[in-house]
Image 1 (tube, rainbow, N blue to C red):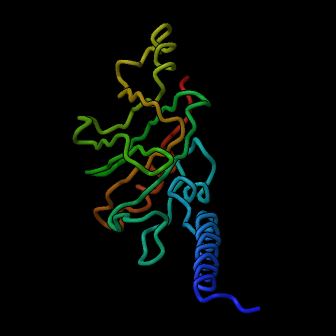
Image 2 (image 1 turned 135 degrees about the vertical axis):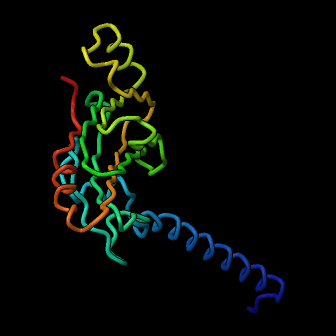
Length: 186
């Protein structure tokens, strides 16, 4: 019994489509296993959450996070707002520092530097709208001194950056970044 040429072509086309579907499904399910971790995931390698952890100095092809400035020192703090608001506090002895807040996908939520803050000291509170409502009922004494950032994002991280004007200042800046706090109110 021989198959007609038309039936053979149809059978071949069906087999090709079936094989293409199988390959497509395998690729789609395999992508998450082969994608690099996010910045939020990478930061966990440098220390515990709710604490600023000093990142290694920037070296070519060895960056802790993409696009870090080699003339800066960096510290990162991961947080979950389900654990309560996060209070950031730091005094950094340099002419320029900045802090960026990012959600867990690495998208910028807020950015601030010492020049736009109009202060040498960082004092910032990050919380959800419901946490802000509760805080307004019983505000801390220093609330008017804090920069208050309200966000719907629950998971995120802060990246604190400080300019190193000269290598002789690097140790002092490292100490300031290590002593910066990323914790709870009170």
